[in-house]
Image (cartoon, rainbow, N blue to C red; front, side):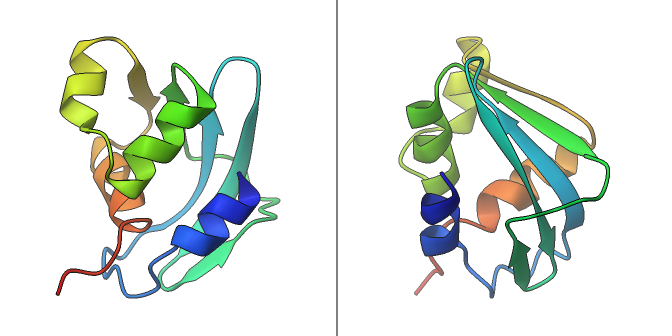
Length: 99
């Protein structure tokens, strides 16, 4: 998952996100930080938001924009604890830039 995050991180996401985030998928998880235009894969700060996914593959699909977060939420495959707006900012930070 660290490689996925590093490969998909969009440094120009312009969300203003500055947080330590945990991704949890039941049998595993990681935490990292997004500090404006920087991705920190080894975050030692307290986690400020956790995103819970049905599976690691769903986490990848939602972060990359391949899956719809609203549908995943409505089907109880995805939830979050923390600041709601950060959920959208986190997903925006890993989506490709718009042309």
